[in-house]
Amino acid sequence: MNASTSTAVLCCADSGRAWEIRQGFADSGVNVERQYGSTSALIPALADLDPDSIDLLILDEGVTPMNVWDLCLEASVKLPSAAIILVLDSPDGTKLSKAMDVGARGVVGFPLSYEDVAARVTSALNWTKTVRTAVRSRSDEQLSADARGGSMVTIGAAKGGTGASTIALHLARAAQAARPQAKVALVDLDLQKPDQSILLNVPLHRTVTDLLGVVDELTPRQLEDVLFTHEDGFSVLFGPRHGEEGELVGEREARQILGMLRSRYDVVIVDIGSVMGEANSTAVEMADEAFIVSTSDVPSLRGARRLSELWQRIGVRSTQATRIILNRCDRTDDIQPEAARKIVSLPVVDVHLPADQRALQLAANRRDPSLALPGWTKRVRELGVEMKVVPADSLDLPVERKERKRKRRGKKGAAADQDLSLDGDAAGGSDDPGGRADVRGVDGQGDDSLALPVDPATAGADEARGGTGRRALSRRAAAERGQSTLEFVGLIALFGLIAAIGFQTVLIGMTWVFAANAANEGARAAAVGDSARAAAVARTPAAWQDGLNVSEGISEVDVRMRTPLLVDISKDLQLVIPASAGIVKEP
Image (cartoon, rainbow, N blue to C red; front, side, top):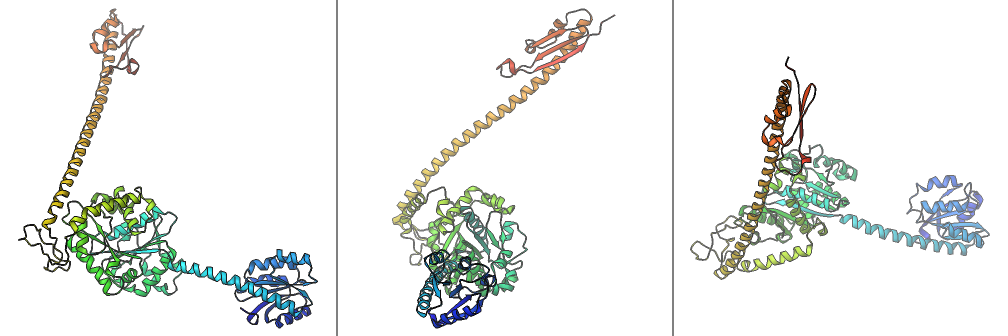
């Protein structure tokens, strides 16, 4: 910035004085583009001025109706990056001090002198340049940060039914629960068969196809109108209502929509399904991390490898930049995670999800993800930490302890993995005395490229691991037997308590019957002149006689009888049953 290209705004009430000021500043290379005759005209105009188009604001001391000091303070707030120069009559120390207090960058005396004006203009323009350079630098840093936005991961499926959509949904829940203040978005880009609306039991009022008409001029407000906000806090962009509408979402549309989401959300999780098109291929290219969900069987592992090789062929992601998530793993599976890692020949996430149908049965059938069992939810959080979408401090188990466990697992599996070949050079045929049954190659050929031979040298290690496993199973079986014993004792105690309560209830009913009968017998005896008490006691069973109290009146016999207790603890706990009968005298 230099004086020859600088522009200024002048506020001066006297037109003759204003002409002199314009000429004086023009000699110093300042072009006064606008002139205002009063503060009432200048202040509203400041709101409409482009802050970067005005370099200087020249204020004359004689402005009205607002004085120049208040005007300078107001203008410095509205145009903070423009330098203010005051034109004062006979400036002295007091006026200079006031000028500094109200934010002026320079003071010139009237009438103007060229040297004074040139010096003040140069100093003010240098200050303006410094301020605007600092502001632009900070703005560029902010724009760069906004352009990077939050993290984005894609979750694909090796084939249909591997659970990719379910995992994506629960990861979004885990990410939001771990950081309630963060913004998490779940995008359903499985355009042919989107499932997120089904898993969440949400009617499809708005989908990704509603953004196609405005995708070139997409605004945050339009995006928010289409997103569905779940009660757990995360937002969802649903896939199209009909599969054929997915063809309308191309590379350009996906890039615009995902770019907007990434710039406004801290975590974006994209469910891309198993069928690749322009939109979900673009998502894989834009993502920080790409994952493929597979189960521990050869067809699924074969599908995972084929999908990663497809991404590499079309140039969106290399195979080694793709990671595999193993779902539904069980100890009884023929192919364990360590073997699956060798079969698929791709990086595999250390955290595997267990095969537990009960964990998700209610959540899937009732379409409420919050009904998933805590064990599954915790395992998903651990998976989210591995995928870097959930912070590590959200887990109950410290990260250091988890790392130690993984290292121990790696050491145990090292001996078994060292001779495991995927190149097909050592086929473990049925004639090999130390071999196992063939596992067909990922490409489905019979070349045994994925055979799992067992080298005789490692048989001892396998046996040792088998012994350790059997001991662990024995300990678990013993623990389960102890638990069963405790449960049996508890059930016996419960049944005994129920039986005691039932028997005590029967005793109360019998006491009521015996009390009424004793009162009737006593009244009948009193009517003929005999002892009412003797008759009542004679008709009462021995177990109830100790708690019997008979009182004879003029016209009736009253009986109070205590209920026997199954366990005689205290007489205060005995229930007293009253009964009475009228005396009818014989003539």
